Image (cartoon, rainbow, N blue to C red; front, side, top):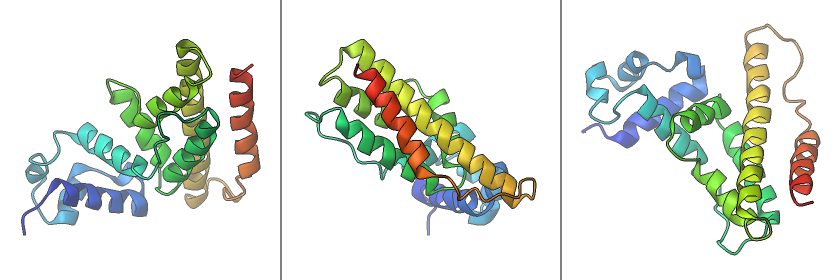
Length: 180
């Protein structure tokens, strides 16, 4: 059976979810797929390309709101965005890296901006979408980092005590403040 790009991404996601981003190397990925590391480069140009593909896979479950959606749809998209990140170990860190490497904003960011343009001027819509994107990535990254530190024995408290209500409070504060 010939190796495909989807096979490479699937195996990378498996390593990521089981061991974390710090353990995802091209050598480990090649070993998991029982190929030489050079064979991976037929399917991904670099580790950065692999991380971007993983980020795309992580974000694939985030629904895109219809073009005529109201700004209230941004809240639902942000919650789905967070859920997608939490579904994968180090999901927020990977998506943050992919965003930093990308030439344009994430699709989820563009979708929120488009929804916000229904009631805000384009500049405020762009700024609000950026703030919400950064809020979701930052809050989720902190939660996932705490989980990693707990697994490593550095922290003893339960990172599952995330208090989703606090996340929603912050999200709502951003959205309400932006629409004033």
